[in-house]
Length: 401
Image (cartoon, rainbow, N blue to C red; front, side, top):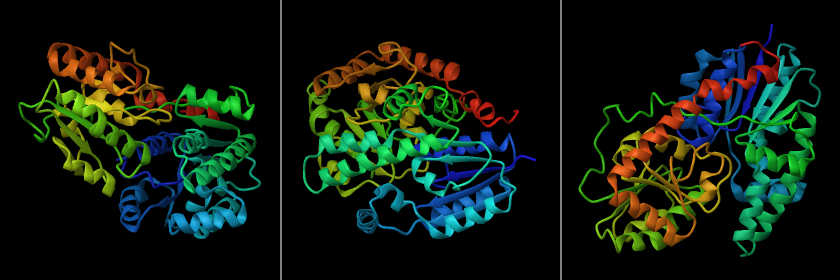
């Protein structure tokens, strides 16, 4: 009988951030194919406890270890051993022992690893199918970090990580049966870097729960008022999100204010850094920190903005906003990988002036904004159901649905 080992870098529950949303729906899809053993890491004991309480009854086996390594320690260890820092950050001797013992018992027939950091837990010898869901090309992300930040030692750290991860990613991809990425753009980039073909490197896109993200639901009223509201959602200790809201608040919002002096900008998401918190000193800016539910803020938005300078794969924040029938203004980087038509389902702009003009257009023409929001939701319903998105897993693993 088939049994699947699912290796995941953050325990999938609760699905309240981009990586956990994808891994949770992947777990659900795998559980429909065969019994699943989950071996996962957690950022802290609270996250581990929540995941254990939810997932224990849904798995045949569950092991969650809390990550211990700090970034400075992981960097020092990685330099000494000549390996990527990313791997050191997600290394757990206890989890490795558990995986080795579980595979050694002989019951595991298939392995799925989620995120490149988990490739280090793949057994050296395994006869069954192995899928590696890289999600994004992380080495390319660090290369972009290095290009954007020339300060030392950060430039050296990012350049080193990009180089070592690129070698590691290609090595892993040659070991496994198939490597998955969140979009065709990411898959094509990896094919060009690794030399592997479309039979070994496949896109499996993200979806959206359009029943949960439904504008018809009755939600708590937040952010209500006559003044127009722009909203950004995301994990607010993540560098691309920090850079995006800083740019919007400092450079774009003042341009919007020339036409809409009372405009408000809400930054909604957990773990805002001091740098993000400081933006509240600017006129009209609110930093909410973690909220129990992002949907009320999306529902209240006159425009959802995603001015990301760096974005890899598919942005869940856009899928959520579009499913909620909200008009979206996104950078080209953020919109890449979204199956939507600029001008019909969302507005795309890359410089401060164009972004401000797009936001003001939505504020000025509420009929246009509503029409675009409805078109966006219809697109999500038609193209982004999670069951359809995860359907290829069965074929890739050779397991009938």
